Length: 168
Image: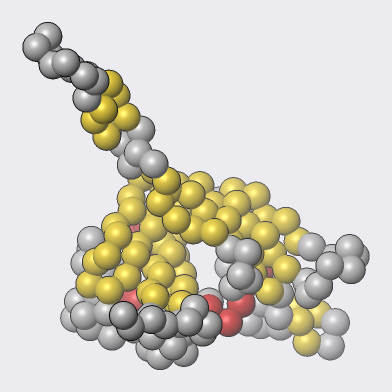
């Protein structure tokens, strides 16, 4: 069985705005590399958690069924994005993501697994696509618990596409 160690092989791309991806079920490479889209992988802390959750369900059975039937209805996902801050000489650098991830910002998180994070997205890459609204943004500091960070609570916005291929 082929195996790969989970070190340096996850890429996160932020694409701002609901319209940032014109076809989220088949994300276009031009959208993923457009102005405003950012490969944020170098800033993502390992405590980040963006994943699907169990779907909402209903229990519905017919009069002749002899056991319950559980039917999935609405899918769910969640997100907590933890990012390193980028500071130069004691002030936020122009690349610091605090200006991107602000309360109320809406955009797409596109995650690719398996290739080096520094390898540019390409046609046929398989990705996961999530639409989020940034809710709470906590800036850490003064706790002696590591680097300065942004801890962003992300709220699902009704669109999640697992295992879709990037298109031209």
